[in-house]
Length: 74
Image (cartoon, rainbow, N blue to C red; front, side):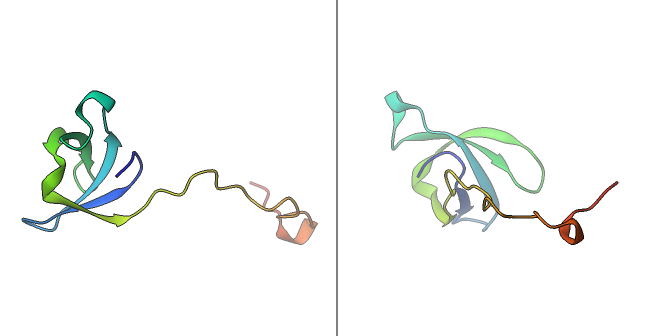
């Protein structure tokens, strides 16, 4: 587990976003925020499973939205 992963709690299947895994407590306590309510808490990592892993270094293609027909002006 690492920051940015989406987690599911095994008890009630709620979805949480993993914010922090402290190095000194790795594998024990994690800081999470509920996707539905925004409630933050420290929790034991054993009750959670990773639903979706965070994608690092996601970049858009260098030629993305280059033509005028693909641009949107607000």
